[in-house]
Image (tube, rainbow, N blue to C red; front, side, top):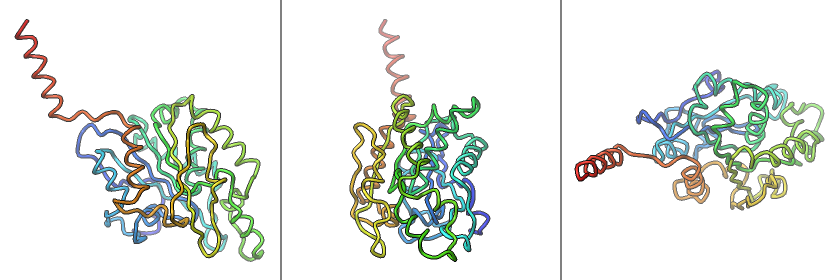
Length: 279
């Protein structure tokens, strides 16, 4: 996978069924990668499909996509884009790929969750984008810093030479912009009919808990964040028997409409004609 192919929306699994249950879009976080963020061995090769985005599509008969964008920590690596611009970028990628015609689930890690919340809020302002809101059935947040991250404050104090990017600057703990975004989501999520699932890390990375329990909790009624014995990176790199994978699979099943198989349609057709013949 070349550097330019790391950006944008890439298909992971395309359902052979002409009527897939819906679309699942994975959105990575700060300094993440559209493939390796989710891969148990952190592989960036888009030909390696042995990872949980592919398994979800295969098991649930849904189309699966992964969104890549530039969100480095430090300026000498890259510049990144503000969250609002990332949201508008993702919105347009969804539109050109006709995502919004079917039920939609987002699975997010780190600031990917903030980008998706911004997508929903932005879509409210444009009639041609409101289908995205109507079709969004659920959002999974993996260690998303709804209240910001103290790590951003630490990076900002390291050294002026590190030049923290706009993505890190927007992540400062308890920033007004993050509080405003989270308050908007909390007040509107029920009316929008969007279900929410939350997981948070309990193990530090290099001595730092990147997103603590308080920041990972969006504060939504009846949504209980689930503690996971993993660090900030490994919480998104799953095996088929891991709790997060099993739980997300169950969550997506609940969000998507019940799949009607060809066999079920044929059985219904036969029963209908049998009933007609007995009249």
